[in-house]
Length: 156
Image (cartoon, rainbow, N blue to C red; front, side, top):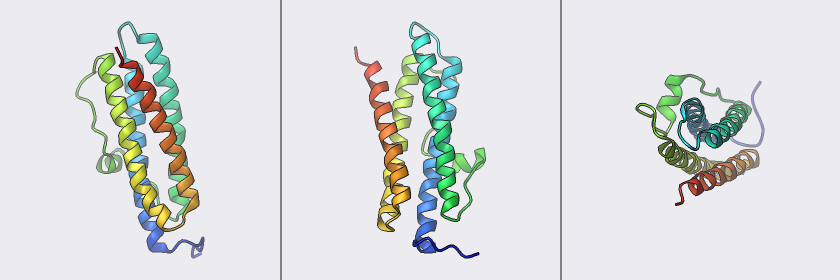
């Protein structure tokens, strides 16, 4: 059955493509955060171990919300490492970083997702896609706040 939600097919495609990049960045950041949770060491171990767990759980739930929005627009959501690696703007680590470097990397990761979400927001706004704009606004709030909180750990 043909979809008719008030957003033309061409615009839904552009929005879905933007959301695919947001999903890829979110999933990559989820993996990185979980990796750090498992491997963090040093005097901040307990604090960071628990914080990273809170963060990766939030990211895991977000991946599903983003994928469901892509599906609501009539497109298939990416779901493989190969797809995510082509779409993401977040680099993988080489080895296991020290705790402070983990924090720096996560700040950059959250900032990267925020930038990707802002780009996707433009297409959604142009098409008057309030559902996607709402989702992206919520994601921006999470990533900006998380980056701020992580950045504050690096203050001397």
